[in-house]
Image (cartoon, rainbow over all chains, first blue to last red; front, side, top):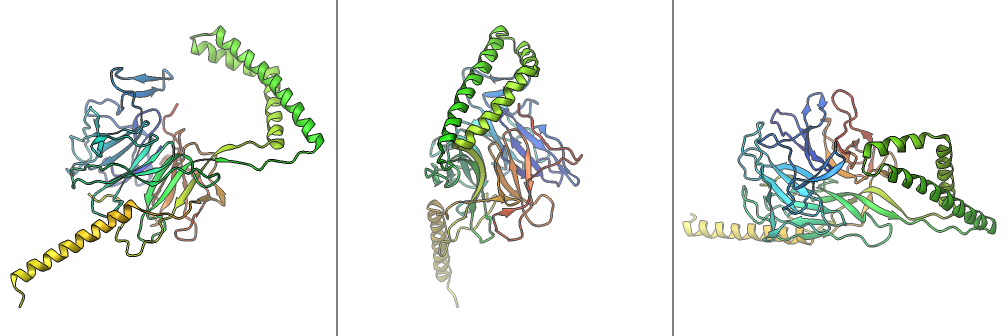
Length: 323
Length: 110
């Protein structure tokens, strides 16, 4: 959920524009007292802003709006005055790497977004962020006065799409990898890169702040003979309890096949049984002991700074929105 | 006295210099180099346990210092105040961003 601050409704207060995994775009209206609760941004026909697939919260299922179109799931949304006509247009990012435009055919503060998603091109081909797009960000990366896009990748990496068009008529070049995915252990984020290009340290050039995941590799422990025996017992008991839990869970699934509400009811009731609660408590305790004796690699989140290395005579000056 | 041809030549030279500077900027932007990544901390700790952390820096309280805001997959927004050192990687405690009616902001996600 990448956040963008912009005065979307032209009331003089900064709002938050964002999109989430549900596949829709939200506004959190700003005011002198703070931000209001999120509300959907809608198009000129009062429809939700979506691509060809979204998550229907009520149905608890993914829904395709048009089976004839490729499955493209919106996971990011931001605003930018694409055509320099004084109002904010929408830029939408799809999970698999495509980027789309919804032009605002209204005016500042009274948007009327087009109902069709117009695919953006990069290097003459449909946008395709390697490894899938977390969220594009607007920035004048090379200081030429034109707004570029910098995109993070779900599989790691930050990509720069240089604007080689002109103000009001952006054209994007093929991507340049600013930072490639990390391969080394414990050396920064590996996957799920959400990238913020910004002058972090105020030294006049653009750095990258990146949120993501890495795999934490703990050091293996040297176990005593007694600890080895205990670990073997814990493994066996945990296997037995896990199998028992799985068998009962599968039985409920089969009994309520196709009926989600019936499953939820029976599953909740089963979890309230004293015997099941005791079994789950024992499983948690054994798992903690197992991890203590045999630490395992773990996916962890974090946020990192990639500070731009000083370049002698670097003329690039940061600008959030050039043209 | 400056002749018009001299002005024209000067303009051309300035234009060429400008183009060179822009080309140099693009060249350096294309081959941007970064120091090894440094992990940011909040209240002295790395920012663990956040699903798909998405960072943004923005001054939301009007104190002319940018806060660190982090969106996540479940739909929450966390915010941390900047540390004492300008450009430093140590931030204050991460707290959930509240709405104007003092409720935790949460976007609709599952």
